[in-house]
Length: 84
Image (tube, rainbow, N blue to C red; front, side, top):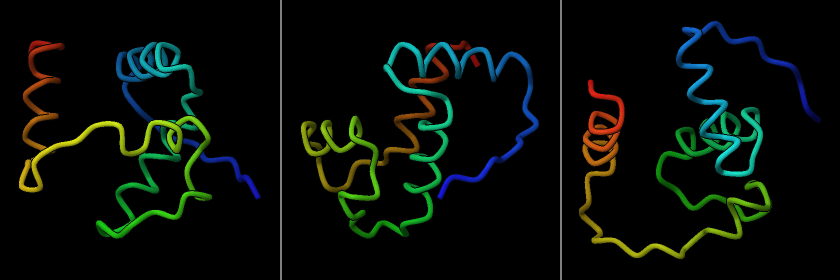
């Protein structure tokens, strides 16, 4: 069952997120839902049925080292992109 959620964010962040979601072929709601699912799984395996079709389709196509610090990498890449 879907339920409405209201978020208060900076206008610029919303516009960037909308553009990003559109480029990825998904809605902003899907993107936020998938993010919440990801951060609340405590690094356990997410059931395939819990992921959206598009995320499930992409699952496992990228192989990385087991000890990669994804938060550090994400921060670095976002800093490059947005000049933070």
